[in-house]
Length: 259
Image 1 (cartoon, rainbow, N blue to C red):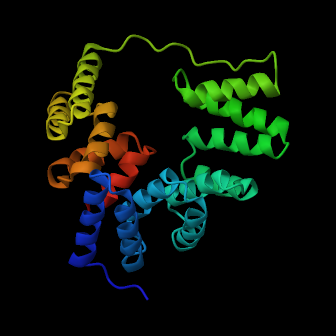
Image 2: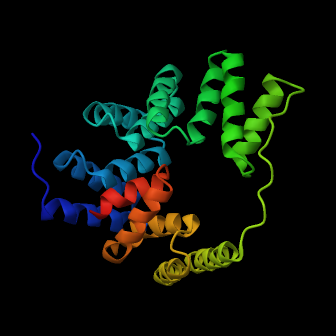
């Protein structure tokens, strides 16, 4: 039986978030589970509980819960992604591929599932399909750098030696306004790293006053709003960000959470 959400459920969500911010991950996990027992559609609990399951290696629990979630919410991209990743890490690659395929129908521009699909296809002995998945991941990722880019390149060198994917052409120099917003973003990241999260949020908001359509700042605002709350002042900007970057998972989670 589903009990209508009310003040008690909102209080549980805040309690879970407080546990998570303070590093009490076991308490946060149990509290998010209680939220979903009372309000199965709560987007914040769906997203954060999945992250905690994966972080703690609770893949079986994640697979069981998120198989139920996607039956109830077949349009929940975050639930399909968590289900796919937990199945992959839990050893169910055929199931993971089905979940990632459902996720890609909802979020076709996200490169991340292509990497996981490549790993699964390789483990299933489907070499040609794995090569296509890794190449798609690298192509969609553009000129980004990171450990998964390196791992995908290593996989291609192993599966298809002598071949290399074509990378996107270097981007032209950014206009002055974009360079200014990039400096604001770096300053906010530095403040956040020193534990000055309210100051980091204030820096992002000030930057958005100058460049209200800057995607990096809007995505950063979504992340920090999930941690600190304060939706009232941020929601109009977050809605604008979701219009500009409709496939960003942080914005996809934050805007419904702020309502």
